[in-house]
Image 1 (spheres, rainbow, N blue to C red):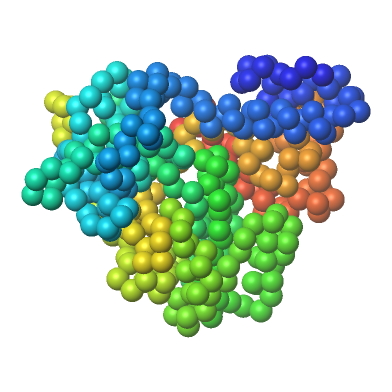
Image 2 (image 1 turned 120 degrees about the vertical axis):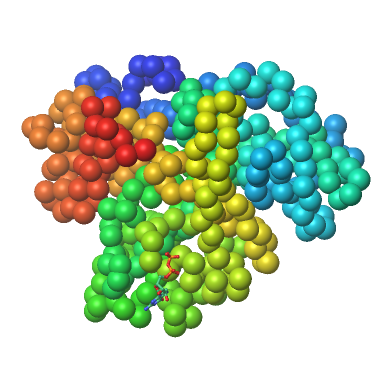
Length: 374
Ligand code: GDP
Ligand code: ZN
């Protein structure tokens, strides 16, 4: 079977009938999956591609200029932590870096690794940007054709939920797992407040998310110092974002792994060229003593799943993947159709009902007919 062209011909769960009869269909489909996944994550990137070509990066050109990580930005100031010394300096951006940039508001973003030309008085100038490994972005709130990068180079998302109060909320965990898959970040599920668990509760969570789905699940209690060492080990050396409902104990956990490390939600008024004022919550990266960073970002709604379409949501539920393309109808929405392989799997108990419910909520939300909360 020829490989489908990227992005155009095929979607998951949308293989033609003859494809489904192909003996090697599983292998072929896995190729399709990977191709398609790359296409999706590159969709926005294609739009900013020209911009990126405008600033080609060759490390050999910049060996004289120390590397640093952008911790935060405010009104043209970039607070950069130098990798060699840990010193934080205030830098501007060399004008030439902005030339040819048309599709993004964020030439430099928090999390970017940059080369610095030191100036007098401890200030500096950003002279080159290391290409980003990951990018969490959204359409700019004021000019939606432009990319607004929230944070660059994050590689791990810590999904915090609690038991007791607030009660464990599977739909929110599933939503964050889709988010992690979509942005190609490594997820870690942390269940906090285990001191409040009722018998059997933690076992059920472990059975589904760890044993069945294969995610890493860490049980913790910030209050009773349970799981703190394991969490410290898990975040070490990574650039982490931490997400979860208010009150689940995100700040308490961070403070437990590193005293003084707290989430500070910042509101900053920024004026964009003549378009009036609006409030943005800025990202700040907090360096970790054991290496790595925790990024304090706006909520998932803001850097969320705005680019996801209803037909794609099923792919991000990992246990659905073996069934995709197996439904009777190529364009099955897994809603009510006869011969739906996913509905049958739910019926048999092979797919957890809670996961299928989360899927349906997200699928509905990503429908263009549905007004998005973001
Ligand atoms: P955040 O909004 O996610 O940052 O949550 P906080 O860290 O502010 O915690 C919310 C509340 O939960 C606070 O009153 C904490 O003292 C409490 N809390 C945090 N961790 C635990 C825990 O492990 N067990 C119990 N019982 N309470 C906790
Ligand atoms: Zn179906």
